[in-house]
Amino acid sequence: MQDPTQQFRLDGRVAIVTGASAGMGVVMAEGLAAAGARVVVTARRKERLDALCGRIEAGGGEALALACDVGRDDDVAALVDAALERFGGVDVLVNNAGFVEVVKAQDEPIDTFEAVLNVNLTGAFRCAQRVGRHMLERASGSIINVSSILGIVGSGQVPQASYAASKGGMINLTRELAAQWARKGVRVNSLAPAWFPTEMTDEMFADDNAQQWMASRTPMGRPGELHELVGPLLFLASDASSYVTGHTLAVDGGWTIV
Image 1 (cartoon, rainbow, N blue to C red):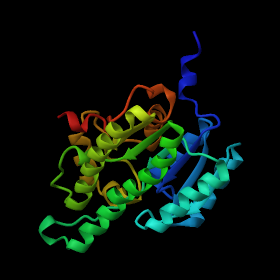
Image 2 (cartoon, rainbow, N blue to C red):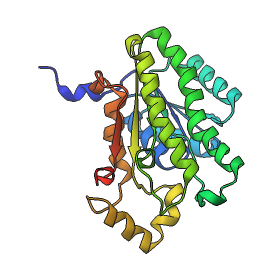
Image 3 (tube, rainbow, N blue to C red):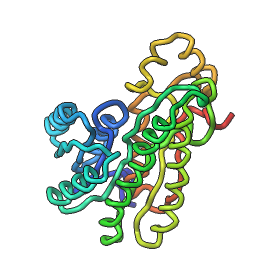
Image 4 (cartoon, rainbow, N blue to C red):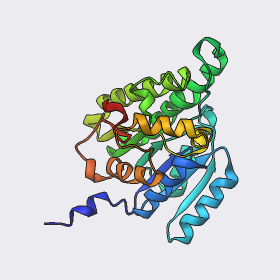
Protein backbone atom coordinates (compact mmCIF):
# COMPACT_ATOMS: atom_id res chain seq x y z
CA MET A 1 0.00 0.00 0.00
CA GLN A 2 1.17 3.52 -0.79
CA ASP A 3 2.04 5.62 2.25
CA PRO A 4 -1.38 7.09 3.20
CA THR A 5 0.21 10.22 4.66
CA GLN A 6 1.21 11.23 1.11
CA GLN A 7 -2.45 12.07 0.46
CA PHE A 8 -1.96 15.17 2.58
CA ARG A 9 0.97 16.49 0.55
CA LEU A 10 0.53 19.48 -1.77
CA ASP A 11 3.83 19.33 -3.64
CA GLY A 12 3.77 21.41 -6.81
CA ARG A 13 0.34 22.86 -6.13
CA VAL A 14 -0.50 26.54 -5.81
CA ALA A 15 -2.60 27.92 -2.96
CA ILE A 16 -4.04 31.40 -2.40
CA VAL A 17 -4.70 32.43 1.21
CA THR A 18 -6.65 35.63 1.84
CA GLY A 19 -6.44 37.48 5.13
CA ALA A 20 -2.89 36.21 5.50
CA SER A 21 -1.39 39.16 7.37
CA ALA A 22 -2.20 37.85 10.85
CA GLY A 23 -3.61 35.08 12.99
CA MET A 24 -5.24 32.15 11.25
CA GLY A 25 -4.15 33.27 7.80
CA VAL A 26 -0.47 33.23 8.75
CA VAL A 27 -0.63 29.76 10.28
CA MET A 28 -2.64 28.42 7.35
CA ALA A 29 -0.20 29.81 4.78
CA GLU A 30 2.75 28.36 6.68
CA GLY A 31 1.00 25.00 6.96
CA LEU A 32 0.24 24.82 3.24
CA ALA A 33 3.83 25.75 2.42
CA ALA A 34 5.16 23.09 4.80
CA ALA A 35 3.03 20.55 2.92
CA GLY A 36 4.73 21.53 -0.33
CA ALA A 37 2.42 24.16 -1.79
CA ARG A 38 3.59 27.34 -3.47
CA VAL A 39 1.64 29.97 -1.60
CA VAL A 40 0.15 33.30 -2.66
CA VAL A 41 -0.53 35.31 0.48
CA THR A 42 -2.78 38.32 0.33
CA ALA A 43 -4.26 40.97 2.62
CA ARG A 44 -4.24 44.74 2.85
CA ARG A 45 -1.07 45.03 4.99
CA LYS A 46 1.67 44.31 2.49
CA GLU A 47 4.59 44.69 4.91
CA ARG A 48 3.27 41.81 7.01
CA LEU A 49 2.85 39.67 3.90
CA ASP A 50 6.45 40.36 2.89
CA ALA A 51 7.63 39.19 6.32
CA LEU A 52 5.54 36.03 6.03
CA CYS A 53 6.96 35.28 2.58
CA GLY A 54 10.46 35.75 3.99
CA ARG A 55 9.82 33.14 6.66
CA ILE A 56 8.33 30.67 4.18
CA GLU A 57 11.22 31.10 1.75
CA ALA A 58 13.77 30.79 4.57
CA GLY A 59 12.23 27.39 5.26
CA GLY A 60 12.69 26.31 1.66
CA GLY A 61 9.22 27.18 0.38
CA GLU A 62 8.02 29.49 -2.37
CA ALA A 63 5.66 32.37 -1.72
CA LEU A 64 4.29 35.51 -3.36
CA ALA A 65 2.89 38.49 -1.44
CA LEU A 66 0.12 40.52 -3.09
CA ALA A 67 -1.84 43.33 -1.48
CA CYS A 68 -5.59 42.91 -1.96
CA ASP A 69 -8.83 44.16 -0.44
CA VAL A 70 -11.38 41.38 -1.08
CA GLY A 71 -14.12 43.97 -0.70
CA ARG A 72 -13.09 45.45 -4.07
CA ASP A 73 -13.78 43.75 -7.40
CA ASP A 74 -10.71 45.20 -9.12
CA ASP A 75 -8.39 44.06 -6.35
CA VAL A 76 -9.63 40.48 -6.52
CA ALA A 77 -9.35 40.40 -10.32
CA ALA A 78 -5.78 41.69 -10.11
CA LEU A 79 -4.91 39.16 -7.40
CA VAL A 80 -6.05 36.16 -9.41
CA ASP A 81 -4.45 37.43 -12.62
CA ALA A 82 -1.12 37.95 -10.84
CA ALA A 83 -1.23 34.49 -9.26
CA LEU A 84 -1.94 32.88 -12.63
CA GLU A 85 0.79 34.88 -14.31
CA ARG A 86 3.37 33.89 -11.69
CA PHE A 87 2.48 30.23 -11.19
CA GLY A 88 0.30 29.29 -14.18
CA GLY A 89 -2.53 27.90 -12.10
CA VAL A 90 -4.32 27.83 -8.77
CA ASP A 91 -5.16 24.53 -7.08
CA VAL A 92 -6.33 25.69 -3.65
CA LEU A 93 -8.15 28.81 -2.45
CA VAL A 94 -8.51 29.57 1.25
CA ASN A 95 -11.09 32.31 1.82
CA ASN A 96 -9.95 33.53 5.22
CA ALA A 97 -10.26 37.34 4.99
CA GLY A 98 -12.76 38.85 7.36
CA PHE A 99 -13.43 41.21 10.24
CA VAL A 100 -15.94 41.64 13.04
CA GLU A 101 -17.82 44.45 14.73
CA VAL A 102 -18.99 43.68 18.26
CA VAL A 103 -22.12 45.75 18.83
CA LYS A 104 -25.68 45.02 19.96
CA ALA A 105 -27.97 44.27 17.03
CA GLN A 106 -30.35 47.11 17.88
CA ASP A 107 -27.48 49.57 17.75
CA GLU A 108 -25.51 48.32 14.74
CA PRO A 109 -25.58 50.83 11.87
CA ILE A 110 -26.77 49.38 8.57
CA ASP A 111 -23.63 50.58 6.79
CA THR A 112 -21.52 48.65 9.30
CA PHE A 113 -23.61 45.53 8.76
CA GLU A 114 -23.22 45.88 4.99
CA ALA A 115 -19.46 46.49 5.26
CA VAL A 116 -18.95 43.27 7.23
CA LEU A 117 -20.96 41.26 4.70
CA ASN A 118 -19.09 42.86 1.81
CA VAL A 119 -15.76 41.56 3.07
CA ASN A 120 -16.67 38.36 4.88
CA LEU A 121 -19.32 36.96 2.53
CA THR A 122 -19.34 38.84 -0.76
CA GLY A 123 -15.53 38.98 -0.67
CA ALA A 124 -15.39 35.21 -0.34
CA PHE A 125 -17.73 34.89 -3.31
CA ARG A 126 -15.65 37.32 -5.37
CA CYS A 127 -12.57 35.18 -4.81
CA ALA A 128 -14.37 31.87 -5.26
CA GLN A 129 -15.96 33.04 -8.50
CA ARG A 130 -12.69 34.32 -10.00
CA VAL A 131 -10.63 31.34 -8.94
CA GLY A 132 -13.51 28.97 -9.59
CA ARG A 133 -13.67 29.93 -13.26
CA HIS A 134 -10.04 28.90 -13.62
CA MET A 135 -10.55 25.68 -11.66
CA LEU A 136 -13.58 24.76 -13.76
CA GLU A 137 -11.53 25.12 -16.93
CA ARG A 138 -8.99 22.70 -15.46
CA ALA A 139 -11.69 20.46 -13.91
CA SER A 140 -9.75 20.44 -10.65
CA GLY A 141 -9.46 22.44 -7.46
CA SER A 142 -10.28 22.79 -3.78
CA ILE A 143 -11.85 25.87 -2.19
CA ILE A 144 -11.95 26.20 1.60
CA ASN A 145 -14.16 28.91 3.09
CA VAL A 146 -13.19 29.85 6.64
CA SER A 147 -16.48 30.33 8.42
CA SER A 148 -17.01 30.16 12.19
CA ILE A 149 -18.98 28.37 14.86
CA LEU A 150 -21.07 31.55 14.80
CA GLY A 151 -22.18 30.50 11.33
CA ILE A 152 -23.69 27.38 12.93
CA VAL A 153 -24.96 28.63 16.29
CA GLY A 154 -25.65 32.00 17.86
CA SER A 155 -23.69 33.62 20.64
CA GLY A 156 -25.79 36.34 22.16
CA GLN A 157 -23.27 37.11 24.87
CA VAL A 158 -20.80 38.41 22.28
CA PRO A 159 -23.14 40.48 20.10
CA GLN A 160 -22.08 40.43 16.47
CA ALA A 161 -25.10 40.04 14.21
CA SER A 162 -23.32 41.06 11.01
CA TYR A 163 -20.46 38.61 11.61
CA ALA A 164 -22.83 35.75 12.42
CA ALA A 165 -24.92 36.51 9.34
CA SER A 166 -21.84 36.61 7.12
CA LYS A 167 -20.50 33.31 8.44
CA GLY A 168 -23.86 31.58 8.23
CA GLY A 169 -24.16 32.79 4.66
CA MET A 170 -20.67 31.50 3.93
CA ILE A 171 -21.65 27.99 5.06
CA ASN A 172 -24.63 27.83 2.72
CA LEU A 173 -22.62 29.47 -0.07
CA THR A 174 -20.19 26.59 0.44
CA ARG A 175 -22.99 24.07 -0.03
CA GLU A 176 -24.34 25.78 -3.13
CA LEU A 177 -20.98 26.17 -4.87
CA ALA A 178 -20.16 22.56 -4.00
CA ALA A 179 -23.44 21.37 -5.49
CA GLN A 180 -22.96 23.37 -8.69
CA TRP A 181 -19.33 22.41 -9.24
CA ALA A 182 -19.06 18.85 -7.88
CA ARG A 183 -19.46 17.15 -11.26
CA LYS A 184 -16.92 19.54 -12.75
CA GLY A 185 -14.02 18.53 -10.51
CA VAL A 186 -14.06 21.43 -8.05
CA ARG A 187 -14.61 20.75 -4.37
CA VAL A 188 -15.84 23.43 -1.95
CA ASN A 189 -15.77 22.94 1.82
CA SER A 190 -15.77 25.08 4.94
CA LEU A 191 -13.84 25.26 8.20
CA ALA A 192 -15.75 26.55 11.22
CA PRO A 193 -13.28 27.46 13.97
CA ALA A 194 -14.30 28.28 17.53
CA TRP A 195 -12.27 30.64 19.71
CA PHE A 196 -8.61 30.96 18.75
CA PRO A 197 -6.09 33.63 19.81
CA THR A 198 -5.99 36.16 16.96
CA GLU A 199 -6.06 39.93 16.57
CA MET A 200 -9.86 39.78 16.41
CA THR A 201 -10.08 37.99 19.77
CA ASP A 202 -7.28 39.83 21.62
CA GLU A 203 -9.68 41.55 24.01
CA MET A 204 -11.43 38.30 24.90
CA PHE A 205 -8.19 36.46 25.56
CA ALA A 206 -7.00 39.34 27.73
CA ASP A 207 -10.10 39.13 29.92
CA ASP A 208 -10.21 36.46 32.66
CA ASN A 209 -14.01 36.30 32.69
CA ALA A 210 -14.14 35.86 28.94
CA GLN A 211 -11.56 33.08 29.11
CA GLN A 212 -13.58 31.32 31.81
CA TRP A 213 -16.70 31.66 29.67
CA MET A 214 -14.95 30.13 26.65
CA ALA A 215 -13.60 27.26 28.74
CA SER A 216 -16.91 26.56 30.48
CA ARG A 217 -18.86 26.47 27.20
CA THR A 218 -16.37 24.19 25.42
CA PRO A 219 -16.60 20.45 26.15
CA MET A 220 -12.82 20.15 25.82
CA GLY A 221 -12.49 22.89 28.43
CA ARG A 222 -10.23 25.29 26.53
CA PRO A 223 -9.99 27.49 23.43
CA GLY A 224 -8.12 26.30 20.37
CA GLU A 225 -4.45 26.71 19.56
CA LEU A 226 -3.67 28.03 16.09
CA HIS A 227 -1.60 25.01 15.05
CA GLU A 228 -4.73 22.87 15.54
CA LEU A 229 -6.21 24.40 12.39
CA VAL A 230 -3.46 23.08 10.12
CA GLY A 231 -4.46 19.41 10.07
CA PRO A 232 -8.12 20.10 9.19
CA LEU A 233 -7.01 22.61 6.54
CA LEU A 234 -4.61 20.16 4.89
CA PHE A 235 -7.31 17.49 4.92
CA LEU A 236 -9.71 19.71 2.97
CA ALA A 237 -7.04 21.15 0.66
CA SER A 238 -5.47 17.84 -0.31
CA ASP A 239 -6.39 14.55 -1.94
CA ALA A 240 -7.07 13.16 1.54
CA SER A 241 -10.59 14.63 1.15
CA SER A 242 -11.05 13.79 -2.53
CA TYR A 243 -14.60 12.49 -1.89
CA VAL A 244 -15.63 15.33 0.44
CA THR A 245 -17.49 18.41 -0.78
CA GLY A 246 -20.07 20.79 0.64
CA HIS A 247 -18.97 19.89 4.16
CA THR A 248 -18.46 22.21 7.12
CA LEU A 249 -15.79 20.93 9.48
CA ALA A 250 -16.13 22.46 12.95
CA VAL A 251 -12.77 22.87 14.71
CA ASP A 252 -14.30 23.84 17.99
CA GLY A 253 -13.43 21.53 20.87
CA GLY A 254 -17.07 20.41 20.85
CA TRP A 255 -18.66 23.89 21.13
CA THR A 256 -21.41 23.16 18.60
CA ILE A 257 -22.41 19.74 19.98
CA VAL A 258 -23.92 20.98 23.23
